[in-house]
Length: 178
Image (tube, rainbow, N blue to C red):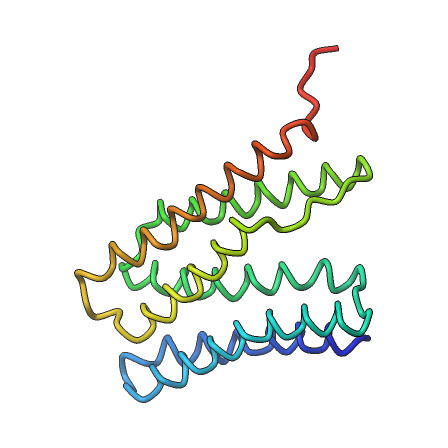
């Protein structure tokens, strides 16, 4: 197993600790900062593992599978907690989940046709803005006025990047009637 894949697995391993800290943070305020630190650390491993994989020629099929899955698990774990707490409406979480499943499905169809759909800038911006918004929410989830700002910072880039992926790769779907 490559170093890059080990770092990605470490990100996955951080998720339960992050969730436990965040879920216990209303009872033990200091755990808010622990949850934030774990989330930031896990988020940074996404940058680190990608750089190591490219720099040291450690790009692998396992890494290509695990890296985006780890990102989704980390982000969705935080959103599920905020949804459970009544801060994130279920429809907003559903938009994020729908985009992730749809883009993954599109990529699978493309791979079946011998084409790789690389992450676009809008997807990278979506990931970055979502992670920053979730960091803000971890610390300031008691600020009711901030909830809608965080939701918009997550949902709008999610919708935009999802639509862009489909517009740019519509031909992969081959919807011509035969």
